[in-house]
Each structure stands twice: as C-alpha cells, then as structure tokens.
Image (cartoon, rainbow, N blue to C red; front, side):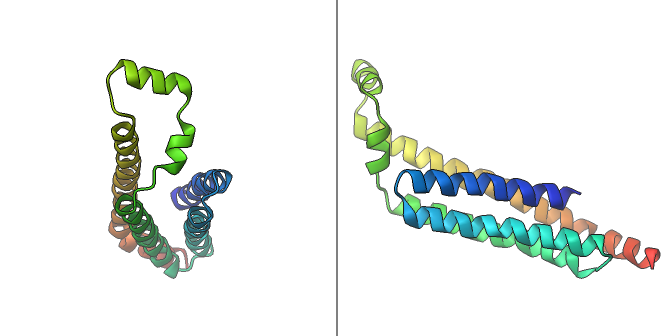
Length: 152
C-alpha cells in the first residue's frame, strides 16, 4: 500500500512540476520532470508484483527509490551549477520590486538566493524522503519475502 501511494504521489507531484516547467517555457525541464514522473510507474509496477506474490517486486521498489534520487539530485545539481534567473525575473511583480528596494535588498541577490534555496531544498527533501523510503524497503525485504513464501 505504501509503494502504491508513494508511486501515485511521485507521479502527481512531478507531473505538476513538468507542467509548470512547460508553462514557463522550460522544455528541457518539462521533459526531465516527465521522465522522473515515470519512476513513479516503477513504484507502481513493484507494488503490483508484490500484490501478485512476486518477490522481485520489492527489488523494483528499492531500485525506483534510488533511481528517482539519482535523477532528481542530478537535475538539481545541474540547475545549481547553471544559474538562469530569467524565469524568476519575469515572475517579480512591481510590488515585489518596490518591497525589495524599500528593504535595500539587491534584486539580483534576492533572485540568486531564491534560486539556490529552491533547488537546494528540493534536493534535500528528495534525498531525505527517498533515502529513508529505500532504507524502509531494504529493512523489510526479508519479512516481505517470508510473508510471500508463507502465503504459497
């Protein structure tokens, strides 16, 4: 059940990111996010294999966690090393600009900080969540296999 919900959640969140990237004209980001959303299908496949009493389903679940972790961390690292504030500049409203000016905060510094925090927080959250979920599945591998053997 956890794998099915996680897979569905991954697909929904990352499809949202893909659509957001497409909406702002970031076609490369949209393609990458859609590919990453496909990892949610691997979770679903693993869950379905387990439901059909196939032990290899747990391996699919573990692999999907590490695959998603690798892809998202790679994307975040690429974004962090290739700073492009174009979309952020366009998102700044006049009200935001005047607030930054009143606070005596440089607009470019603000955009750079937002960019770094966004991709850094995304990488950290995905790392913690997916690493812990992979560890959870790894620790329960033997119990799942024993339960599947007992059901035969």
